Image 1 (spheres, helix red, strand yellow):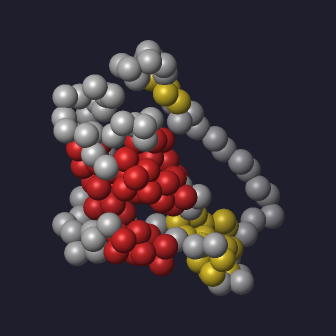
Image 2: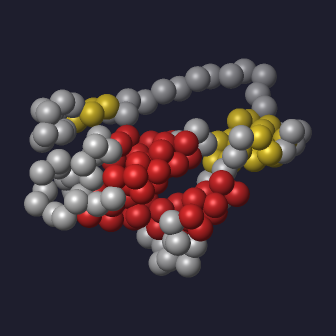
Length: 147
């Protein structure tokens, strides 16, 4: 198997690498971002997105399409999971600020289009997990975010 449901799979003696480069390039093309300037982070540091930000409303259909595609990319891109989930909070009434934040994620993906998940072959598998949370990270509903 090499390509399945937008995922590319490279199998070697050392392990399996799963990534979505082709799908990511299709997403960039769909939103006319294939020639954009890339950035090194998916979200501006210390930025806070809120529902009522006073900005002009964005096209809900286009925004939902973009966020849905970003969420699908999280299958092999845990580096965009946090920001994709934050952006999904604003699907009902996205503003231009939310849309610009989503486009920044595309610019980040352009910078790192070949990232994916490497499953290294191992006799002694040790699963390690990490978690982090903020206290009342969402100003809108006063809920914490963990990831």
